[in-house]
Image 1 (tube, rainbow, N blue to C red):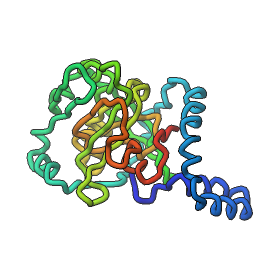
Image 2 (cartoon, rainbow, N blue to C red):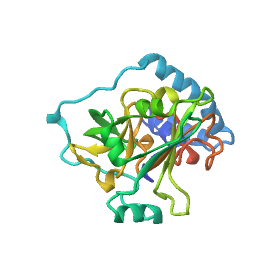
Image 3 (cartoon, rainbow, N blue to C red):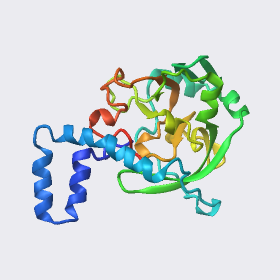
Image 4 (cartoon, one colour):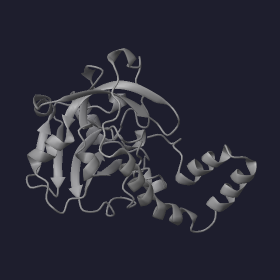
Length: 255
């Protein structure tokens, strides 16, 4: 979740760079042509389907504790300054509640204590950033499938939208992200409240963040306060399904 993340046209041209200056120049010219990004948008569902065909619903690799990185590098917002977040921070997040809303049978709220009392999953996984760096950490949290099971999923639901406390653009908006239900129900998709055996640090998303292990780093929402099930994400912000997606990034973001 960094301002250095690369939009689709630059990612494509970076790939072309390895093939020679001629192809790179052609890529730059093509990426600036009207309608080029529309073509990429049409191609993205095909890319998503190919990735899923190859990977199925497999688990990503989990690592031994000996491979945990000494420091889990934070990215994007590291200290939200929105009024609602600062008020919770001043209370040590005692008043925090995770809300489940939208196309659910039973809207619910969970305090941090309530979340910690639920059956948890701990996993040691690698965080891959589009910027080119990776880090390994141990996450503990509640599987999202378990929370959605408690709340009940209405038949019309297709996506989970994560609403966050941080205002990354500093324009009064709030960060958001989304995934489809297939990824939401994956066993390694968790609402994480601990990192490396300790409460989640603020820089890494306290009090709660998502770990969606089959996704790139910008899909891992921090400072989450509401999970909303919807049939479409078009009504949120720029309509592309996430803060970075509204600026031209790939919605699927799979690894």
